[in-house]
Image (cartoon, rainbow, N blue to C red):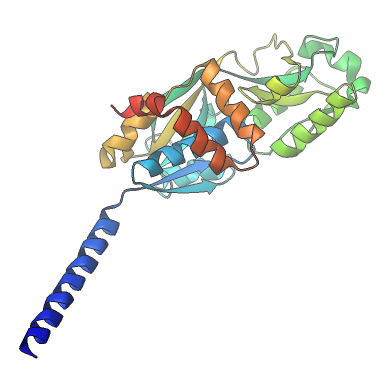
Length: 284
C-alpha cells in the first residue's frame, strides 16, 4: 500500500510538471500578425509564403484581411505587426505620411513595381492622352478597383489632369480582373487601373498607357511596414522582413504558382519547401 501511495504521488508530480512545462512552452511561443488586402496578388502571395515560413520556425501566425486604410490604422495602434504591400514613393505616400511616427519601415521586397492605366496589347493607342478620342470604344469607362486604394486616388487625379471624358468606375480587384479577362477573350477594348507585378501580365498581353503628366509616377518599390517597436520586440522576425527581397524571376514564379492553385496555403507550403534555402538566407 505504501509503495502504491509513493507511486501515485510520483505520477501526480510528474503530470503536474508536464502540465507546467506545456503551459510554459505555449506561453513562450512567438506570435506574429500580418495584414493583407484581398485581391492584391503580390501582397497575398508574399503574406502566405511568409506565414508558412514562420510556422516552420515555430511561430503562431495570424493573417488579417482588411481594406488598406484599415491596415495602416491597425499597424499604427499596434493591433497588427506587419504589412508587406506598401507601395512607394507614389501609391501609398499619403497613407504612410498620415501615420508618421506610429509605423516603421522594415525592408524593400521588390523594386520594379508600377501602377497606371492598362489596356490589352491589341488596343491601338499608347497614351492616356488618346483616351478621349476613343472614349466610345471603351464604353466611356475606366474600370477601377476599391475606393481607398492608392491607385484609385491617382486615377481620380488623372481624370482631372487629363480632363478625361471617361467615368472612373470603382469596383473591386476581383471584379476588375473579371471584366478585363472577359473583354480580352472577346477582343474588346477596355482600360483598367492596373499594377505590376501581377499574374495578369503572364496570362494576357497587356500594356501600360504612357503617362506624360507623371500622375502615376515611374517605378515603384514594394516595402514592408510594421508597428512601432516591432524590430525591438522580435529581432529574428524583423531580420527576415528587412532582408526579404524578390527579383523579377522569383516574383513571377511565386505569382504564377499561387494563381494556379485553388488553395493558397498549400501553394505557399510548396513554394517554401522549394525555396527553403533562399528564404532561410534572410535570417542567417
